[in-house]
Length: 184
Image (cartoon, rainbow, N blue to C red; front, side, top):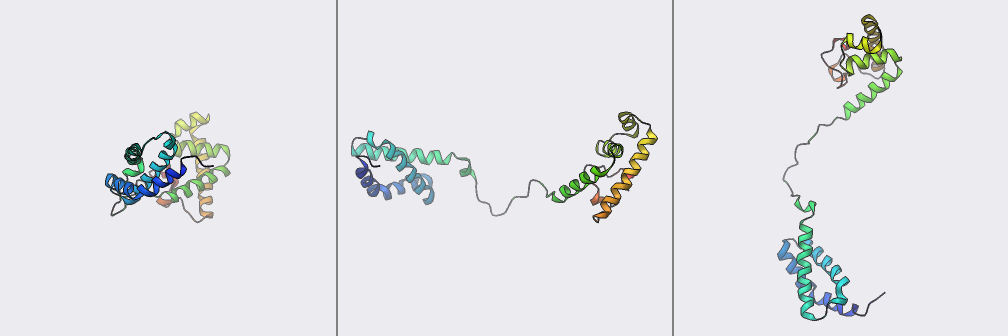
């Protein structure tokens, strides 16, 4: 679908492209960005072409549109990025091994009976004392100790089945306090 002024617009684009790219380059300092700015300006101008009356207005409109396009492009967040000679230090550590351990711990906890799982989770993941755990579970402190001991034995067996040991510091889950003696 063509409009009546399309031939005139094409003639303007062909005749002024190089001059406008040079202007855009002087504004932004990058040939690629200058090409993009001129292309964006031509798109804007094509939409407004029927309203532009004389040749002097076309040149002025083209310059203003390029200036506006270069300014808009410079405001985009990715334009504030700068190349660096070296990569920055990673903001976070690689924790993929810890994720594997966490998944292993969660799956091992699932196979424990409910009371043993509750005792271990409250004692070591929730950091409750034996007395607080007994109160939450509604049992005696001795029951908490026995349920915890059985659960730890079952967890050691689960970890041993996959080649890990709860006695090794790196095998202890990051949420379990390392100073807790029940794991060692």
